[in-house]
Image (tube, rainbow, N blue to C red):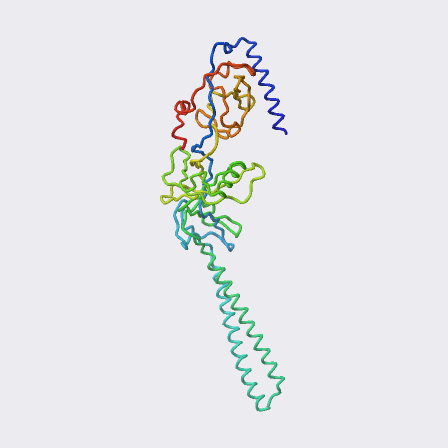
Length: 382
């Protein structure tokens, strides 16, 4: 309803502005002059469309220590390519090494206690069998042996935990990738909340670009029908310097939800990156050929704009020109693509500035094929 009122207001402004121009003495079409018109024809076009893209690594991981300590060694440099499992940082490990030794000693001690408990249980068993000791004594030593077993299990877990913490003092690369900035230097005290660096795998990259709801619905409806509106396997990436990226990408998937603030949804394109040219976080433009069916091409010279609305003059069978607004889907070079105007609609092709709304004019029809040649549209149509 709001759009309707806006259009009514804009149309009133158009009428007022056109009347003002006429009263200012602008030249109008004479009675004996002919006005070039053309008949819109439904057509199918393929044209390149570009979207701003955010480039991200296929893997991007923050490297944080799992234990607290002082940075003793930094074994990599910023921007360096590291292999999976390669040591990157070493933390001070003396206290963790001492904890391992203590846990090992405790483990050996409780193992010895368990051996003694096993021996004592066997000895009491023989004496009970000879009826020298009561079975109550046997139950007692069995419980003592079970306690010894639990102490061994507890000591083993403690030993494994200290060994693991000791291993954590050496921080390795989780996968092959490039090292980012290293904020902590040798001597810095770090803990599990400290970000030592990040590692990004850019052997391939993801390019995320956003489309609005209308574009998404058009794409999904065509996909459900088995049609293909876009070159999903031959996507081009334009780099920030304006040069095309040497490798083509493949559109893979779409996010699950629309952004509430913008009403857009992101598509994902995968690009190979064997030379490491693309880095995580770089920007660019995704460009692909888009197919539009049953649309009308309106030459720009046939239109005029007022208050963000685009208008043309429609011409009926009696030759009466009526102003009409329409919504362009896309603008490319010297023409608009729209589905608002019906096929076989006659519009004023040239001289819209000299036409008055409601005026009766003499028409001279220009072939749509001639317009295509003039605007160089043949290469865009299939």
